[in-house]
Length: 170
Image (cartoon, rainbow, N blue to C red; front, side):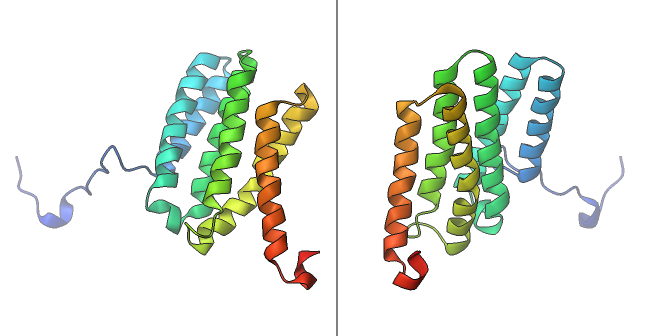
């Protein structure tokens, strides 16, 4: 066995609690591959793992540095799970994931608790969650949980518009 210098030591492996965007992307790609192979249960299991990584990204220090990417992982994971659950004939659970993504972004968009970059990214990504909720309603009809999520964002948008100077509010 040869001795190695400090320069040739491998870089430290991230602790299991540390989430990375690369880790999320690998899991999401594996879930996508299972889905296209018709392996819905395997896709669901991989997507749940991807969501757990996305949740750690949102709750961790990487959010401040890469808000758009972390929130994209969050939204994509929720939407992919909702799609898989709808395929499994579990619409109530699908709705929960759609609403959780939207309401999570509402919370992240609260400027009282987050830095400006995080708030801006949350508002940008909310277009996707809002659109997904409206699309569900068009396809499946009105659902109380979705109505509540849309009303919550409408209240926030109304408050935001009311806080703007009159020339910017319209």
